[in-house]
Image (cartoon, rainbow, N blue to C red; front, top):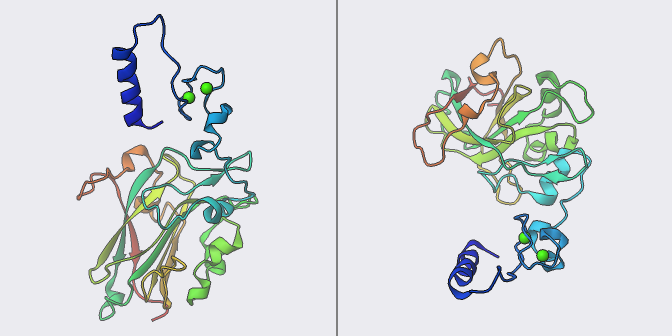
Length: 260
Ligand SMILES: [Ca+2]
Ligand SMILES: [Ca+2]
């Protein structure tokens, strides 16, 4: 039952019922209340069998399994990407924060400033699916290709855990490009940042950039890049609707094309 019907039902109860107790209502499926008074609450009640809130979460062995089965992580710009929890179920945390990312282009792009309308930014955990350490050497060795067929090499490897991931067409005629990245944690320092600039926009079919990969940068050393890699805190959240960020801006330097 949606909010409107709840209000109407409440009105009927307040104004239309003079009996000794509340009349049974229609079961709502996610509020811990047994509205129809049959002793079965929410998803335990057969009335909720077809409710989306009671669908079993997809099973997974690693986080990237959840990308394809439950979540188009490119289309839900303001949703955190799901995790594969300890019970091997895909879960999307309710809490998330919007990080304000700025890709800053250096002088190396002089004369090429319009050449990179596609961008991908990932916040990847420094602990892999198998528990081993992840650093930029490893990321660069796997994401080593520069054609559209290589654009999802990191995801295809199934080796990594993600805090956030965004792939989008950008206006790159200016020296910096703003991207909002939705983190699925509100605190934490266990991440590195990997960013790519591509020569063509994001494809509607694959949701990855097209053309050729022109520049890629990985940042994993918090002593060298304290502004970018400082721990995430709730104060980093960029409130929706604010045109000017009041929170931390995470600057990613993209000095010039490595594959011009
Ligand atoms: Ca209920
Ligand atoms: Ca019930």
